[in-house]
Image (cartoon, rainbow, N blue to C red):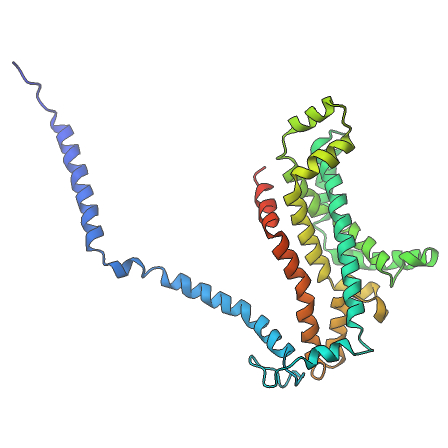
Amino acid sequence: MSSTPQDPTDTTLVDAQAEADARIERRRNLKPERSRGSGVWWRHALAILALVYALFPILFIVSSAFNNSGTLDTSSLIPSNPGVQNFVDLFNDPARPFWTWFRNSMIICFLATAFTVLLGACAAFAFSRLRWKGRRTGLLLILLVQMFPALLAFVALYITFANVGEIIPQLGLNTLAGLMLVYLGGAMGANIWLLKGYFDTVPTSLDEAAKLDGASHARIFFTVILRLVTPILATVGILAFVGLWGEFLLASIFLTDVDNQTLAVGLYATREADKNALFGQFVAGALLASIPVVLVYLALQKQLVGGLTSGSVK
């Protein structure tokens, strides 16, 4: 019987592959165990440095809030005279009604956030599901308007609401309702794009099935779509609430009466009145002002992550 001769090229390739595998294995065995983690230590160091940098202001504010000395000169990372005197002074200062400011901020933020989410969802539904002339132009126009700085509109808004207040005092300057209208007018652009991207991920077959059952566009929107886009609604709500809670420029222009001011404006006025003597009240109020934002984030953090990630794939 005659045997088939082996191809020398195949033998060479097999030997070369075996030699390469053996070389890689030798390198792995020669590499010390401690060197495997030597390239990671600097990442942990940077993470710890960033954490310390982020927590230092928070620790300083907490320490100053519970320091009975109540002045900027005596503030330190560890309170020298711990207590709650700053909170007592903050709550009992007749010239600075903290709880009135807190109530005004809560009213503005909750109502404006609810209407922002509702108006944004309605507009996003129209741009995502309905087909009408000027739809693409409207989206591009909204995007274009957002490129202009909001400061350009402050003078025009002030003059407009000053004139509106002469006719309808409840919607003019120095009113919570007028400030909420201003907030609602400027909260549509980015929210519409964010909501539309998420609405586009919902299958249109659900709309068609509902139409076959005789549902109108309004019923489809309120009973079908809104139940499926809860994460993005929560995301927009969180972003709107946090933005309105800390908003200062418009609130300081529109609200001049002490009893109508928001928390941000009132605390800033407290700080400017006497930066040293009233520092304890200021940091105590700032610490209490952070509680609603933290609670909102903790309650809706899962929806926030889901809304931002799911809407970005379309």
